[in-house]
Length: 92
Image (cartoon, rainbow, N blue to C red; front, side):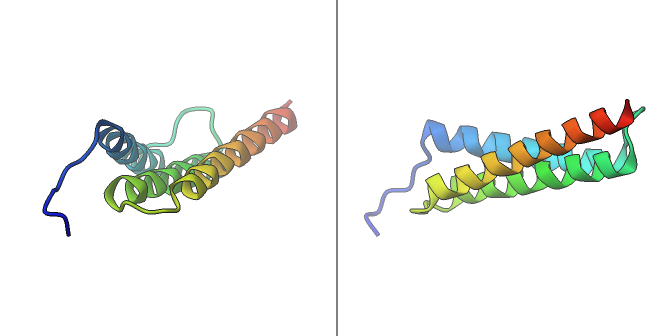
């Protein structure tokens, strides 16, 4: 509307991290790591995919819900960490 189109440094960083997260999610689905159960691989892929999509949304669409989307991304990573801890404890 103002005639200016620009992408700030913070948005470029979010875009880069978002693309990296989506790539790592696809890689986690296609190449499972040694010593990791299938469920752990799916949890890793799903969490990275969700976080990547949220970061891409923040970077590409200037939304007023940026803080909410970042909070959701953080919550997804916290849940992933808790689930990983549960798997490690159950393994022993």
